[in-house]
Length: 488
Ligand SMILES: Cc1ncc(COP(=O)(O)O)c(C=O)c1O
Image (tube, rainbow, N blue to C red; front, side, top):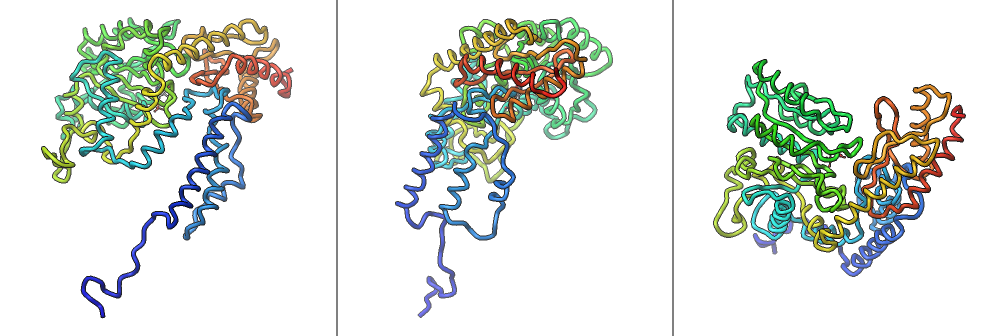
């Protein structure tokens, strides 16, 4: 007989849980072993391998589910095809190398599966503790606030929105920027994420003045002052200076104290892009060069670069917690706070940034700092700077190589030179050398342009790199250069 509670017409209830937990346990342990093997042997084999055509097919999705063994085989086969940043000879752009111990935190975070947009739970508290650590690290005041984000690009958008809205007394949140013509200043060496934030915030990229740099690649202060004066005279509204603490091309640092002075004198928001350089504060070697960072109104930086936290994790720190909150806070009825229960717990992350649903990034950052400690993490940053200096010396001792810029932090830019080649042909040769290093799986530097010359750009934000890797790099560059057609 059918009762109202158990109508026969209902289909059987299902779940995504495994039907056999013991089999699942064995399956996860096997995958974990494969992941640990990859970490243990990270220094072996090719740096980067192009993703094979035939493997693309294995990822095309079908309507029906696949057996777990098939899925796991596909996942295991994917392990060698990352960008290469776990390898000690990955030298491109600015990528961190990750750590084996971060697997533990990643698994824990996946098991908790917390949504950290808000509410009253442990993950929120871990993030608060981490932000407090950052505030202490940069000598920010008690009233400062911060948020763990995907990376410096997102952190910059949040900082510049707080700066924009502060300038317009937060009316811009409702009214937009209207007739206001806000302008900001950064150096010609600044990362593109600053212009992107101007674009996204409706300011327009043309409102970001790219001030030329001095011969040591720092924002030129006299040109900055002149640009501000000219803009004010033209009736525009200067509101922001964005300094660079570690430029992506060459690892140079603006004179942060001087920029803070100009910002104070002109009453402008002082933002610092410290994507990789800000955490140089952990390194005894770099710390003295970061003076002035503690005076910033906002700092954007990454944990996934020089702290080697597994991708992705960055942070925005804002001196005025009030400005930060006023730029983002919005608690509609369904997010109403309470003094007890799940809706308790003060300010929620959703009030400090654009995302409501967000994962538990803070745990892997917390675990990295908790396990390895500030001193060791700082020492590894110093180690990379010393390795870059060593590479600079190798370059200078090699007649075919030309150091294009003094090594500032962890970046060394140089090129291969050959008598008789035109400037264009030399650029092509250096581009080809980098491509060959990548294709042959030997190393993965990137390229950039320094004073019109194509540079082989070696960035070392890698705790696995050894000096022998740099010796090998120089040897292989010389070998490849001789093999590139038409270069001899
Ligand atoms: C100086 C600088 N700023 C900003 C960024 C962007 O950071 P993310 O990729 O974490 O968004 C980078 C990335 O390399 C960088 O080097």
